[in-house]
Amino acid sequence: MIAIFDYGAGNLRSVENTLGEIGASYTLVRDAAGLRKASKIVLPGVGHFGQMMRALDTLAVRAALIECIDGGVPFLGICLGLQALFTSSEEAPEVQGLGIFQGTVRRFPKDARVPHMGWNELEPRAPTRLLAKLDPKPYVYFAHSYYVPETPVTAATCNYCVPYTAVLDTANIFGVQFHPEKSGLAGLRIVKNFVEL
Image (cartoon, rainbow, N blue to C red; front, side):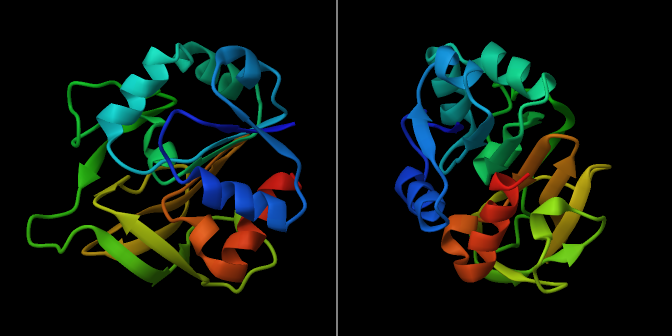
């Protein structure tokens, strides 16, 4: 069972539509028990880092999420769902992320127009299962003001004032800074690649 985690915000309907379009079965979950039953987990995210992490804590699912990820359950974080994997964010320095990876989510430079919105090209950095069967440098849709710097698990980058992590891929953990549910055929393929792992 693919679980889409519903923490009360996020682009749930679009993610549901994308999974439905590729014929994938899924369920919405809002508690730790639902997460622990999942064969795969999708954590979509839009909005504010602090609000998202506080919502996860209010729902008492932080420990279960970490347990599932550490236990090998395939996980896909979308946009803020990718950022949540890290230690902290400049958007809400007082709030802890999941801490699966060390590092701080950064805000784009002061002279950058934010949010960064629109279609941009991915620059592959390492082999990744998420981009299988796609053009070498596909275009996808972004909408964000904060970014994850390049890391050892960065599989593809995008450049907007600075190069940053656009795709993360290591073991069972995947993340995309862009919105595959808004990225047309390329986005459908990326989600299908995750579903078919």
